[in-house]
Image (cartoon, rainbow, N blue to C red; front, side, top):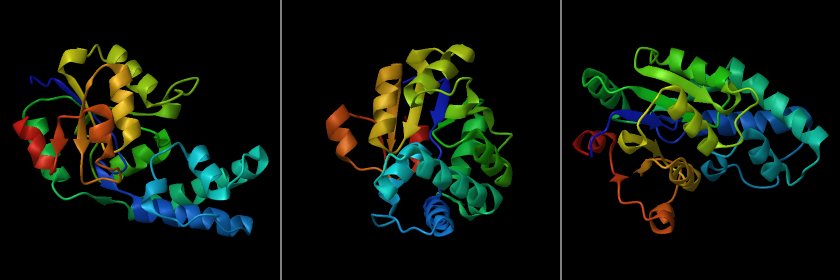
Length: 213
């Protein structure tokens, strides 16, 4: 297909942030004097922060969740984000796509502050035309589908030539709702189940495969 804009998910697609996020989850509970009610594994990464912490704490208590959120943010924004690593092949992909003059964008559930810190940390500012987190909008976007739709409208993208690259069922669903083609990043945190559930026919086994699509 003719690709004129590429929107990337961040965690599990461009970067492996599992170690940093899980460490900040643990630090959040440690500061609150609590233990997570489920094992800290990468399958908890992806949903919005409050949702993930509610799952880990097995509670909907807004006061406790707000405490855990603030603990997490303090740890992640000061040191945790630096522990993220770039997936193999991503750096070459960004260079090659930029060389082809294809506008690149990021749409993530991560807050915009740590997202921008990560982009700056890796020297990626020159690659991305726009970077959005849910809280980039006022009021915050309800979900990724709304965020992607906003980005498409703001940047005057053609949906038929815009793709979203992500690694989770949520990403596939967001692309479907936003009416753009979804490319499944098989190296991320998700499951091939999204291929069956959403009929995904664009599966990337390696970042370099995107250049051949």
